[in-house]
Amino acid sequence: MKHGFPVLLSLLISRDWIDYANFVVLTATLVVVALYTRLTQKLRLGAERQNRLSVLPILILDWPNPEFDKSDTPSVENIGTGPAFNVQIAPIERGAVKMDFPQFGLLQVKDRNAPFMHISKVVEDSPGHRVQHGYQPSTQTLADLIQRNEFPDTFNVTIRYDDLVRKSYTTAFDVSFDRFRGEFTVKYSGMVVL
Image 1 (tube, rainbow, N blue to C red):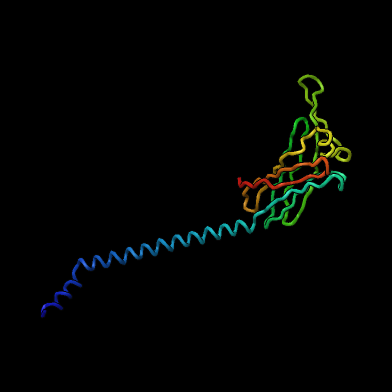
Image 2 (cartoon, one colour):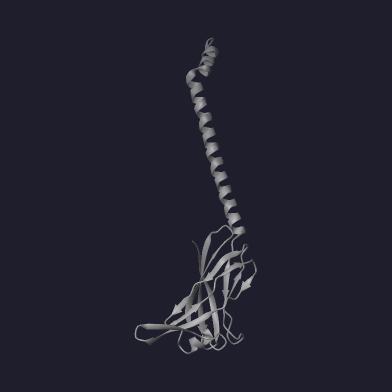
């Protein structure tokens, strides 16, 4: 046993043990760096998402009931946290009737805009020659067309717009008209990032 301590000391100082210790330290460092990188990436993605949500416009569609308003022109409201740019309601065509809406450039947070709705009817005045006739908004409402079966009582409305960082969105709504009550119902259908 006299030689036990020098043998143990020579084992501790041996090259194999130092290589093994070096491997353990390097592996532990690699694991810590990998975990730190992953956590940092999660924090960055969370911050980017938070930033995106802080300027996200969310548009809703409201279609007033013709009984209470002279016309049944829809309005668009921004209930999001950022402004909407280049707001455009897509034209709606059913059969011979077409509804067009002008584009409006900016819809601030909590703002509402009721764009002028132009309703026209395409008729064929001679074989192969189609002419588009516009209705007068004061005398012809969409509810009137639906009541006379010139337009279906359910249809889809799509609104396209951009946010502050020029990301484009499309929001869709299902609109239905209850002929008995004379009321429009609007249901959110979905939002797509383009």
